[in-house]
Length: 321
View 1 (cartoon, rainbow, N blue to C red):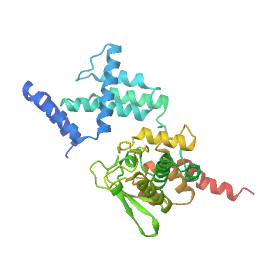
View 2: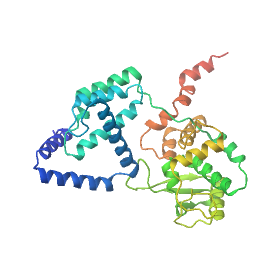
View 3: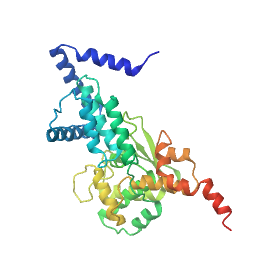
View 4: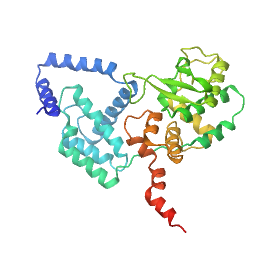
């Protein structure tokens, strides 16, 4: 039977023995093609991982250049245990594996020593991922109600409505252009999500925007005199450059408007899922709303609500008297 991993490893071994000039040419071509194949955030994250690993190697007397011995990688994993979440460590290992792929070398990250080190870290410190605090509809509507009539308030009102209605990630929110609004009967609208974290090739999807949200977004567009190709979420200053906000700025605006330091741009996505479970929405409709292709993440976001609605909770309520 065909074994993809074995075939890939065999190909890597053949390439690793290729002559010097040809090998250097392949490495240069891989780097060039990576720039076009990977998203900018992925490339930035990869370069950060390599910088961090190189700094760790300098501190511990190791050579950061590939090929890197599995024992060195295992030692690196040990050092990250307890300081970083298991999912972050796995991301760091992805970066190191990609470094070896870029040089057509077998990855040390699949070596049993590294796998055992990762399992040890998970067993000792746990594998739970840190989740952003939820921000539900009621709290967002309260924040919207406290906004005034300034240009900044108009922009922030549009941002809050988009965040709470669409359940979009920050990269999706900041990517919306005026032309992405599609009006519907009844005053609602759909926002066209051209690309997302799980749609790097631009298949596209749609996110719902309520009638009040549509009104707020259109009011901001009219006030700011934005054109079809302009980003919806841009600077609020009159005459300011019409460039999209970044994710960190979206998080700061949400923190400021809600008065909460523990929320981020992702909080409305989590809060939306929890609100949906509270009012009895099924998992499939939640997946459609958040544009998930598997039930894992929405179920993860709603696990506290699902526990309070579980059979055990219902049995306890039935026998409460």
